[in-house]
Image (cartoon, rainbow, N blue to C red; front, side, top):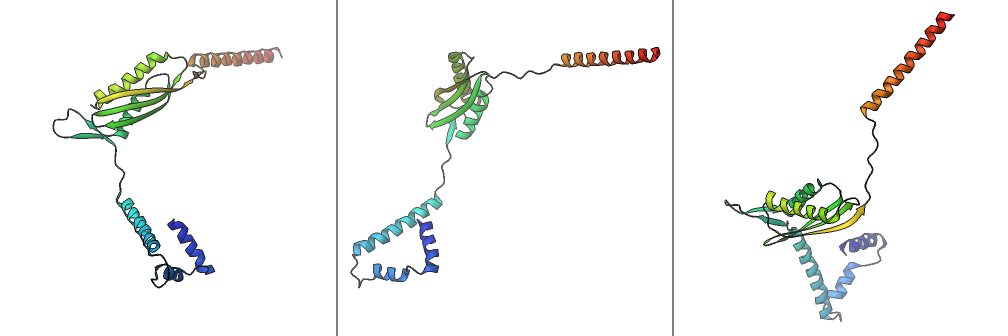
Length: 198
């Protein structure tokens, strides 16, 4: 709104289409037949916008945290982002997974782990899902010492297995080099024999 008013004001400086002083006198001058309720409403709108902008200046985004249990010396907290990263790193080490997304809902008595993961087609889906859930829960409980209320896992895709590119082993390289060397020596022998005959 303020950007629009500013643009109109800048353009008006060159065109002179609107006279702001005349508009202000017509609206707020008590001698004119302007409804006092309209003037009051306009002032209230300006005041509301100013208060809203002032609150935005002081508002800070709240950092989402979770409580770490069994800390005797005081109160320990950990950010939700750190928990998500730890779980994602641990789960990503499991074979046959793709496109891992982790989100955490922090509650007063613990956390809820939500995961969305893609699997490879060749894996046993129920066994793999149990493995993922157990891994995520164990990281939160054992490593981070956080209470886990629930762990939810959604399979979002089944991707075909990627074929590993064929790599030349050192043995095949050595064999090819030996064959090449033998071919070169045979050619040298033939050249020498031809020279002797001449």
